[in-house]
Image (cartoon, rainbow, N blue to C red; front, side):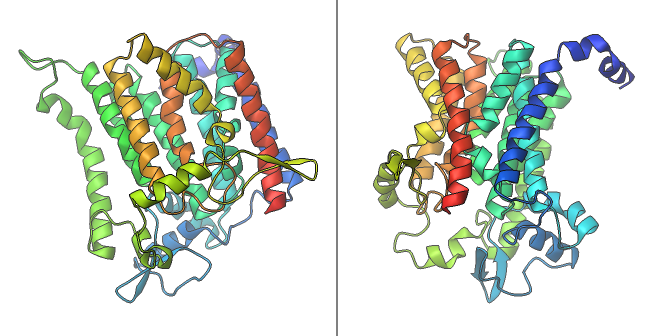
Length: 408
């Protein structure tokens, strides 16, 4: 600990990380400038912050809400009302409720997740050997160059869950690339907590497990670590998963049910919340292009539009995957990641709403932390085409964050 403190006081250390600080302020200024221009109060409490409501309910010694809230997505089951979202973001809100009661600074919390994601994005790039300036640019691209920029300008339940899952997934990959065993423990805890924000982040658990297995000593005569070697790393994540299961069972009698299936929207849907019947329509929606309207670039505001324009990191990731496949240079870890991406993407397409009211395709932001890791781990130089995509991504998402708010 003392060694770390002395390192942080060393002038040479900060010279090597100057761009981290400059990038941090640049990203924060972009975010705050948009918020100021749109008249948003960063310390405001959102009326759509169900997690504050859940934290307040827990502190009263209850799980079920005391009443229905017509403007929120409330699950109705057994004559009771429940917050229909995975619970971990509400755990984070407990200290805020203790400090502010019901007037929690919802948007500020999301802003902190957003800025922390930039820092982790920078750190991950440095870990893979990128220089200070380029790492700062990559970290800025990660958060400013996708729909998370717009998502992070609201303090609702959806925004909190997605921003925190984004951060925790990114952090899990960063920690797993560490040389420290404690970091490997923390990595699996982070992905377990991310699942408690966005359940389909579970697709990346096998990838992280494989990465861990590569670091541990192999069992005698085997090419894989023994159970005894893996078990200490699995205990805490398993306990977290068990807590989710118990919480879900107490509420809905189903260990895998977080509550969305009991929303009126999905109870009344002939095909339920997830179905192959939705895939074709969702795919068509997320391929729709922006268009000119009254001399201004506009876009659909329901069910998504061209995901590769709204989240241009897909334009960087796709060719890298294709090139690796053509050259037959895909390693097992990369193959697992690609399989996780494809499975995650397809399951998202099976969702009835695919995000509903939104700028871009916000559901597909859930893939970006692992996608960012995939790109960085290739250790390829950032060429002119990639740089152009990054610049376009940031410019388009700044424009979209502003225009979407005005149109909506």
